[in-house]
Amino acid sequence: MAELTPVLGSWVHMQADNSISCCICGCGELTAVGRHYVRCSSCGHETNAGAPESVSITNERLDRAGLSRTTALDRFKRRVLKRCVADSSFLLDVGSGSGRFLSRNRDMFKGAAGIEIDPASVAFSREVLSLLVAGDISELPAEVRISVATFWHSLEHMGIGTADRVLREITVRGAPTLRVVVSVPAADSRLFRLFGEHAAYYDPATHAHQFTAASLDLLMSRHRLARCRCFHSFAYGWFGWLQSMLNSITGRHNRLYMRIKRNANRSERMGAGDVGDILLACLLLPAAALVGLLDRGMRGSGGVLTACYAPAHGESASEESTT
Image (cartoon, rainbow, N blue to C red; front, side, top):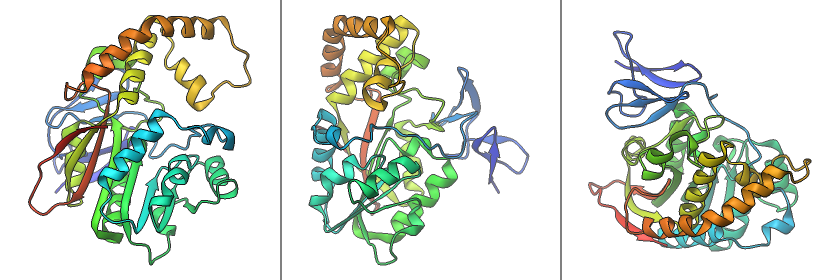
């Protein structure tokens, strides 16, 4: 009988004979991939050898003025939500960050809440955006029945024990027409295979896991959820290729992304490296945009997997959508 045990700061299966196997499928040989992950030979799932069980990060600028600007990713997420929603009772955003997604889409639902562990993001969401945000799913009111739950790049930050507990609670509290939307970096994508540790969505400092399509489906199936639809985002696609190209050329990982999205090093003045990144990005942009467009017709090409899951009733067919 296998049991979960912490190994090197993450979670794997310890078998009765003391051998270690995949925390997702429970089988397969684990082999080292680069400096940070071990990969399952069966489902391809990659587990971080050093990430903590959960990571608190301020992933967005906590600025009301910035939230008023609609981005391509904002439009993509809303289109995905519209395509997936079957019941407008209650929206739960797991890893809600600044509350941007929740504040922009709560108008579609009778009730909405977020789950977030970063103190600064929780305070901003509550005090500035007047959102209902809890530190743990157990803190939600008992009467809540979830119709849609979203994980926008939050699932990879959780240890499997935490992910299982949250998903279990969602399915217990879920409405009959529950939908679960998950967006994660895709370890089996062409972008990851080509760029490896230079891939834009490679972040061992905060990502406990790197999912493949197979391992994500297996995790969700543990909670009787089956994939019913997949989505492709041009915004995730072209920027992923652009930042990956920059990373491989400059040797600096995600510097442009940190400046634009997380506003890292905001106390520093723009330096020669930043100016060089911007100029190089302008040169690489046409190529990145072209590859991003080609991603639309090439399943498994882009670095991000976005999928919708529904309660399993014997069916497992999925539909590919471009939004």
